[in-house]
Image (cartoon, rainbow, N blue to C red):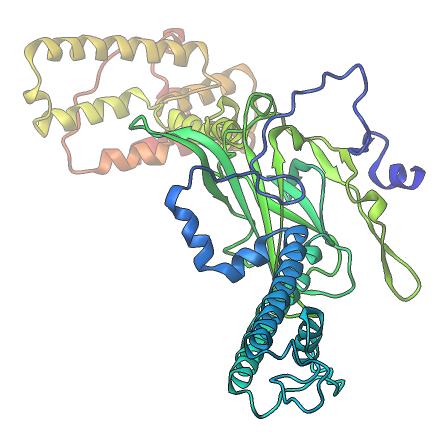
Length: 516
């Protein structure tokens, strides 16, 4: 136990499913099973009527399917009755010919020598049938009816021997007893394997002889009602245990865990831990294979009801490596231990993952939106240029008069707001004409060399590049062939300090403005 806890951790609890339930746990009422744990189908056929003649037409299969006590009774009665009937026929021939009255007369030639009563006729039949041949009783050549009866006895004896002895041989070599050495786990479990919720059970082979071409199948037995209102009692549904991948073909040397993946194609797609308590179904497991020693097909069956399916459990390992071989400990074959397993169904899990999460918005999308927002910050001149370009292209002519008035009034308000923002937050956004005024203010407040003014101008351009349109972009827009709008004369707070701003600029900036 300590080794198991070191391997699986302290959080796992070993559960022995073979123990009897305690008084604290509520014992669930045992319901009727379709297939017992030993594989016997719990179905009886009644009210056959005239269909019983079908059993007599296939008499050999009927005798093989009978239980051993009935087979032995039929075997003994058949031989006993056959012997008595044939012995009676020999006695009747001796009685008709009068051989019984001349039993000890040496001068008389009977049909069968030394047959003078019924016991002697019975012994003669046994000697003939068993080919013992003591030589005391024999058929003479003066009895043609005895010769005919002897031929009939030989033929009928061979037929009866072949029928009954063959029936007994088939019944003794039947692989039903071989199926008892194929072992299934007492319970099935539901837990995760490779990130997927699976229904699992265990199967093992107790003998050293292998099962050739072993194949396993699973059926879900559950009553249901069709959309048309038809009720289907004990409807059978196939459970996929690896038919498409070949996992249903078993190499049954050591105990194997059979896995059914619960996916949208599975009948347990919407099964959760809570709904399992209210379900009523039965899983029938069928294992087929060829017995290696006899070459006959063997089939082993078992079933699991809903109360024998454990949610959140896993089977204990039974394989261990010894010196030169692998050892299987079947004492832990039925034991399970608890593992962390989601209590909801696969359907609920997929629906939960399909819902979009508000926290899953990519960061680059937000950056793109911010970048778009920054690109839409233009100067007043750029807005006027675009407006004039749209007006000359005829876009404004297609608008109603009311919308044109609204757009003209909104444009003037927008110009005032932009100029107000540029005067209050000149560090955040500067238009094309504000740059020389900024340099003028810097040059008037502190006498700095011309090189430092150039450095400040470059820093301003670098800092404002992501936020506004650069001077070069505005210059390119001004060079386009579209007609330029008339300049808008507005009073700026920065110009109220003196006269013309161009008079106080350095010579180099004056030449730049003149070139423009």
